[in-house]
Image (tube, rainbow, N blue to C red; front, top):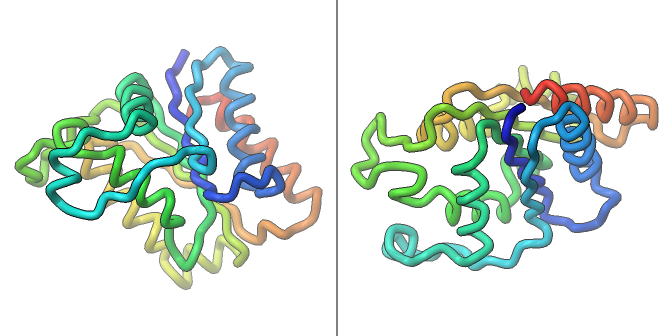
Length: 191
């Protein structure tokens, strides 16, 4: 049994957003396989943005962020779902990560190359986009996903990171059903 923290990073609470359905399929597959899942739905959270280095390093996190930190400390695997917006993560997800991954929780204050405090966890990034995923991967080099992995996840100590890129999200119902089934299997495998 694996302890999974699932972050649904779509900022729009509209249930029609495909990211929400993918996250639900992953969560359902994980639960059916006996894994424990704690879920964070960013669209429902209310927290301020960090506006200074002093605030990031010294202010206590808001209660919803403190709970998310407890969930991340508990987790063995982190699954983060989000849409690609303007070639990167949505601003709300970035703001959440800045609140969540503070010094003394996610990294040592010296911020050296080996400063991550969250070793021993794995992660999966599930990214949806309108363009074909193969185009994003090869023409654009999947730069935002690589940056997320290298500059955030590996920096805080999460070394084992896998990606699922889902392009053409406006595809047919058959394609969507296949993606939902694939995510359910990934959730069951806790990868």
